Image (cartoon, rainbow, N blue to C red; front, side):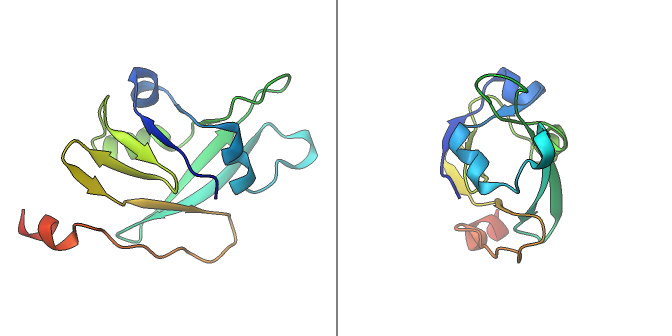
Length: 123
């Protein structure tokens, strides 16, 4: 999977998450000239999230994660200044948490752990 990290901005929290073009190689193919593809991600608790990645029809693709993203943002209480990483995870100031790993639809689920699981359970 293409790796990236991004400090969340207002648009990322309120509308959509823009991602690097290299991220597209990690997704199922955009078949038949489609400009959007749905994919799934599994969080540390086993919850499956469905997201949509869209690209422009013409010119530079400029991929964004839209459908499902705002639900995820609200569920994880993400704020401007938090950081997302790929495979998709997030960190808040002072705490690194691996929450999410993306996988292609139909592929095996990717397992993950939380680096601070014991510390989080104590909090």
